[in-house]
Amino acid sequence: MTGFDVPRFAKLLDRGHGGRLGIRYHGHADGEDGWVELALPPAEALVGDTATGAMAAGPIVTLMDMAASIAIWARRGRFVPHATLDLRLDHLRPVVAGRTLIGRGECYRIAGPVAYVRGQAHDGDPADPVAQIVGTFMTTDAA
Amino acid sequence: MIALPPYAALLGLTMTADDRGVPVLTMPFADGVLGRPGFLHGGAIAGLLEIAAIAALRHALGTDDAGVIPLTITVDYRRGGRDAPTLATGIVTRLGTRIAHVDATAWQDDPARPIATARTNWRLDRPS
Image 1 (cartoon, each protein chain N blue to C red):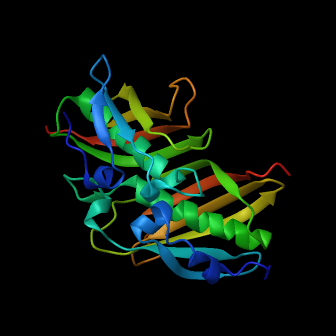
Image 2 (image 1 turned 30 degrees about the vertical axis):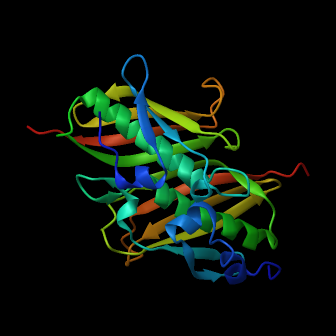
């Protein structure tokens, strides 16, 4: 699984919605139990509930969708265009304002064009996550 | 009308209402909401759907005093979001005392052909 350079690829993600949110590479591990971590810096513009100051779901889904996507390409060993089929986000607790969010995505199974992912996001303590996701992706090239 | 949160401004959302007064959100197609080249980012679509769900829920509650705490959101992506405005609205399928369920749908040219749908669950913190 050395055909896909995760940090090098993650540097290219400075455009689109992820780029607008300032999402950047944080860490990764290669191999069967590999994972990819991206970081989402805090910003007032990410607030989804003015009354509580809690972060909206959109930025968290964006962070986790991207971490999971890169984890899939790392596991495939190459970039293959794909689209999200479905994604569930569990809000475990509100995101504390002013803290960077770290999202870890894992691809735990690939079945032909379909990839299965899961992940967690935390804001400083991995043992106290703020969100958990599970989802599936499918390649967009008719292959 | 409900006040939209800062993240709605980042997505460029504007709010109108359908003929029953239920909020309808519109997200313009712009560089800041793109994912893979030429398509909307799934995260931006999820963000739009969540805000449509909150707007529908606030409309159903008829007050800004109740706290709405997000529990889960499950998004099904049906087709790619192309270079066109995306509209979204929510349907409150159950409004309980402590829990609410809201379905949200997002479409571009035809409401009958959604680009994505979401099921969302909320905890309600009503003033006693």
